Structures are given as structure tokens and as C-alpha cells.
Length: 214
Image 1 (cartoon, rainbow, N blue to C red):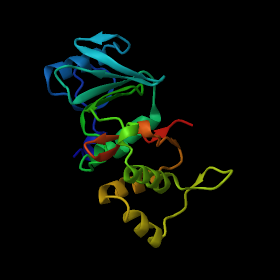
Image 2 (image 1 turned 90 degrees about the vertical axis):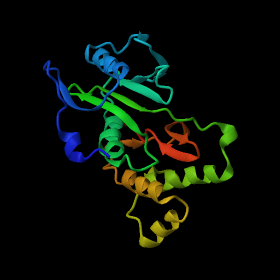
Image 3 (image 1 turned 180 degrees about the horizontal axis):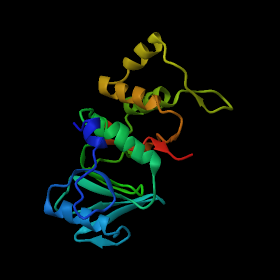
Image 4 (image 1 turned 30 degrees about the vertical axis):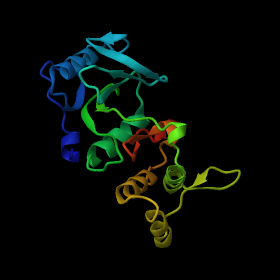
């Protein structure tokens, strides 16, 4: 698990580049990708075997490498503050929680851009929408975003002890804890808990990208 102290310490940067902090990057292929990122090669189609898996909208692109079948790399093409907040404030300090992605490397530059190496997860596809899982997704959204009132946005109020016990009865402990943490979002970001942003590791639900810019 990464401690907050480690997270706040700048990464080693002997060439004086603008690294805010760095975590991971141990193999040669990972280090090569890091060097390419630092050199500004963020839009290239192929980076020494790292090929584009998808372009995730205007903020980032996702890469894969044949030597790392269980990993993907995500490169920011813009300053995605909402996603970076999730990675730095939630995912990295809570690597013990099975409902956040496992991170193998992360670098954040002072210009706001970042590169993250993380586990490759499975998408939730329609045929895997078992009724219990569908109900669990609805509970995650309600616990995190608050209750929806017709004609209004979701309304989040302080959970009563009774409400917390009801939600906890439906979710695994670690998932319940993560949803409570996300619920404490200081309303800088909108929630974006659509199916594409909740994925699978085996049968475990993993929240990959719960926030978006307003």
C-alpha cells in the first residue's frame, strides 16, 4: 500500500524534468514507456510495442503491450483533474481494497498530465448482468451519489446509522467502505458511475473512474 507521505514526495528526477511524484516502473518496457511519456510522445500510434487499445475521449488514451497481458497503460492527453483526484486520493492510498484497480506505476507531472500502469479489468457486458449484480450496481450508485428526487439532482445527506446498516447488508465491507469514501466527495466533481466505469476482476466489482468534470 502506498502511504500518503510517499504520495506527497517528489519522484527522483535527475534530469530536472517536472515530475511531481513517481511510483513504480520497474521493468525495461515500463521504463521505456515512462521515458517516452516524459519526452512528450503521448499521441504516437505505437510506443516500442505499446499499442493503442482505445482513445478514452478528449482526456486520455489506453495502451497495451504483449509482454504485459494483465496490464494497461493510461496516458492523459489533458489535465483530467477529476480522474487524477480519484487515483491520488482514493486508489493509491487504498490498494488493499479489492474494489479499486491495482496500480503498478504512476507518474504525475507538474503540468497536470499523468501516466498510470494498472491491471487490465473486464468490461461488464449484458450477458453478465446477473440480477444480483444489477441490484448491487444500483445500491452503489445510491450509496455514493445519494437518493434521486424527481426533477432534482441526487441529494446526499449524512447517512443515518440505520441507513448505513441497510446498505452494509447489501455490499461487501470493502465495497461499502469505498462507496462511503466516494460519497464524501467535496462536490468538486460530478459522479459518473455508469457501467463503463465499473468493471470486473473475476466476480469482484471494481470502480475505475467514478468522477467527471462538471
